[in-house]
Structure formats: C-alpha cells, structure tokens
Amino acid sequence: MENELVFILHAGYIGVYVTFLYDLIRIFRRVIPHKGWLVSLEDLGFWAYLFVAVFLFLNKEGNGTLRWFAVAGVLAGMILYKKLLGRHLVSYGTRILTRIRNVILKIMTPPIKAATGGMRTVARRTKRGIKQRLTIFLKMLRMNLGVGRRTQGHRGENHGKKKGGIPKESTE
Image (tube, rainbow, N blue to C red; front, side, top):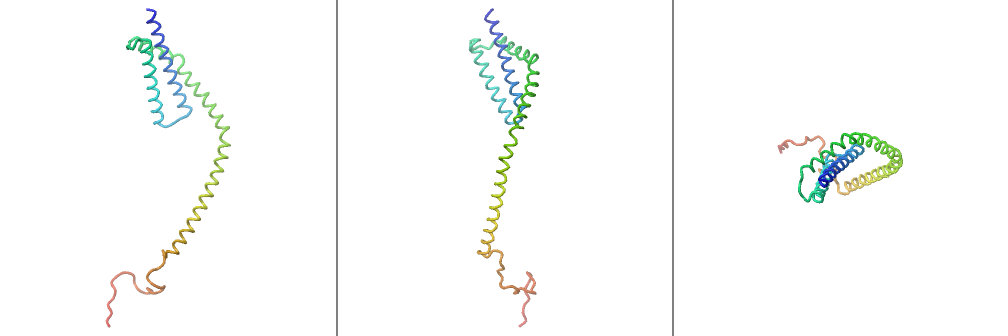
C-alpha cells in the first residue's frame, strides 16, 4: 500500500513537472515570437522528451508496466498545477521576461544600428562603385564589338527609302 502511494505521488510530480516545462515553452513563445515550423519543432522535442521521461519513470517505479493509477496521478498533478500556479506563472513570467527583453533591446539597439548603419554605407558605396565600373565596362565592350552600330552601310544610304515592303522593279 505504501509503495502505491509513493508511486501515485511520483506520478503527480511528473504531471506537475511536465506541465511546468510546457508553461516555460509557452512563456518563451510569447516573449520571443517565432514561425509555425519552429513551434512544431519545439512541440516535437517536448513530446519526445515527455515520452522518454514517462517511459523511464514507469520502467523504474512501475517495473515497466502501465498502471492506470499512474496515469490518474499524472493527470491529477497536471490539473492541480494548472489550477494553482499555471495561469499565474505564464502571465507574470511573460510580463517580467518581456520587460527584461525590452530593456536589453533598448540598450543593445543603438550600438547595433551604429554598426550596421556603417556597414550599410560601405555596402551602398561598394554597390555604386561596382555598378559604375560595370557600366563603363559594358560601354567599352559595345564599342569594341561594334554592338549598336548600323550595319547597313554609311549614314544616309537608306534616306528616302521605305523600310520593308516589296522593292520596285526597274524599267531599264
């Protein structure tokens, strides 16, 4: 009887622990928003960890057999944690960590902007210089290859003649 009571209490502890870990993940998601595929990856990692933790618990404490009162103990621990601490931990934890994040961003933003602003200026100047050099190179290439010149002869040779159409026959 005593072993079963200890087993149920350990199962309740596992429920509290697992729910607490997921609340930490929820706080992290609220403080640092990220894309859906990262959220899915986090959930996958959490469920994999949960599977291993529960498996090890059942293997050690329950001799490898699934006992329904273990599942009831885990659920009871989860519900108890959610009712007593869960809501408050997530809301207050999010507020506190968001304020800390905002202070850190306020401190770090000016040096980062100064560093990246200088890099932007260098990049802009480099881009402009490369563009000018390429334009000059293309002009020189066109001049050397004769691209863009008239190939039908000298200037004025087609003066007064219609382009295209059927040529007139001469009556000589």
